[in-house]
Image (tube, rainbow, N blue to C red; front, top):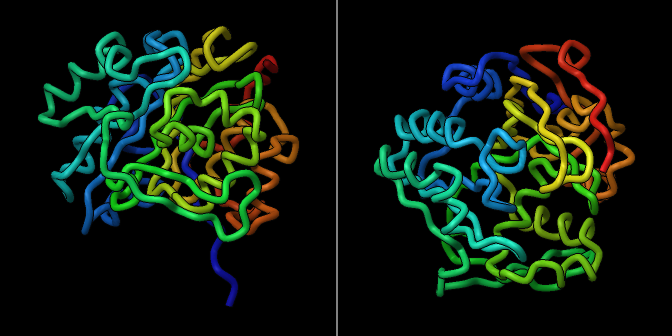
Length: 276
């Protein structure tokens, strides 16, 4: 018997908790996020606010905290420093700390996590060993990504957002190893339990920081990161087979080209994003 293709939800609606919750419910809900802690991994590539299209919208994260909190109270919002950004400063500047405080949830910068474990991809592309904080390896990851372009990877969606789990500020060194290969290695040892792509305001052009905001009023959600990224890429008017890390992930068996869209059809929400 063939397995059913993974479900990916697309919901178009005003920037609200309700839009986020409808997407998450259509994608299968949050009842599977039990038995261990939950880390909500946001995108803090810089200190710009959500309306620039650069960083994860705190409203989306608040909706996730409240939904997940019904089945699991052990929730932490996380990211790590990037080449140009201190994650703690970004959490404050973007309003994420305020949301965490209001909902009784901690924000943790993964750079400061001292207890770490080494994960080894079975067939590495670039990294034979990947060191991550122990809490990352022992938690459900909820991948709260952005719908935007990227000058090195063409898109930055769910798979690319997992790159930020590496507790190393100087991430440009991974770019030298081949960033698409590194993304695939990380996703081969760490698989998010839920992917929610923030498309309330996306970014096109020279992303992931210097691009142009695009008001999309969208949330895309799924439990399969490859399928969710394929759908996100198509929503941006791009060919997923042209995105190297997506293509490599399918070739390695981390996902397939099959998916089922629920909610709004891709063609009803699609927009041709300017490439980076």
